[in-house]
Image (spheres, rainbow, N blue to C red):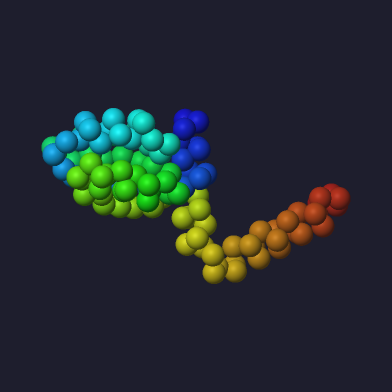
Amino acid sequence: MRLYRLRSRTGFTVYSDEGRDLKKFINALHGSSVRFFGLAVRGDRLYGYTEASSFGRLCEIAEEQGLICEKISDEGLPVTLGRYRHRLGIPLGLIISAVVVMLLSDRVMV
């Protein structure tokens, strides 16, 4: 659970690698500073998660090992907040509701 919260907070990338020598690639990843998790092999493809900031380095390592690196999707809190960047109604609604709660908190309604 703690790892999922960390991934969601920092943002992560779902990727897949395709090639012949996946064991060599995994060993190269262990020797590097790239953080990766959730590796799964399905057929001749390797799927996994990495931090969004380390995806470029992961693809460099994959190309050095002769694999094809493909980004499937970006997920996490930064991506979700980026989708709502231009929506003004959400923060305005939060501010108005906070003001109403502050005004009514010292009054007793009968």
